[in-house]
Length: 298
Image (cartoon, rainbow, N blue to C red; front, side):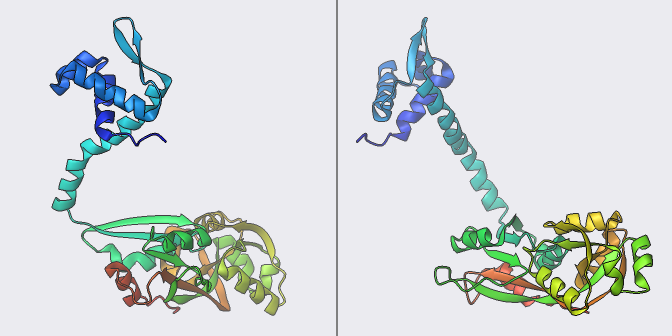
């Protein structure tokens, strides 16, 4: 078994490779040529491969040396950046919040949910959007501080996760002016005639919408299904179909998209959750999210 390599040896090799020869590297390091040469040989011995080979009067990298040089470049570049990173951290303190955003959660809702922390003067917000189960795994591994979702985390003996309700919102139907005009008179029965856009089945609200259609005896004319809520609204704005959206973002929806409200989707709600690894939340910004959780239908 080869012994682990020494980073000092790697550094000497890196300087030799950058300077193009042992003599120039020794001058730069203010060391004896023999000492630098011995250090590089020790690195080659620990890695088990020759890293340099003669070429004319100088040395060039072997294939193994090229691979080692690429890694050394990254390692020592990080080292050169370290003083400035430490200095910046001391001079500009930050409050870091790594939030996982379930891909089924509407983007405009996410902005409202995050609003309570946006005024933090030293905020460093990291948002990771992804599939629900993958985000829960990252949360359990403490790669995330919180996951925002449209559903609670399921009970899992292997993952100790806690659900914190952030509120709920009624759902209404929206669409372009022409579609709303065509559908308003006989709404909601008209949803069997005008084109309809829906979120895909991976969202929690889709099941409630399907039950709503069934309850009203409506067979919707579905012309599009979208995983991304922003795409759903964009295609809805273009006149492709009417679509459901949370009432809590009504004002923002009308401000950002050229759409009108068609009518209420009575009995259907979207629920919002903050999922964490602690029953009693310790992270100050997550605490702030929970304390301000007043998203509720009007």
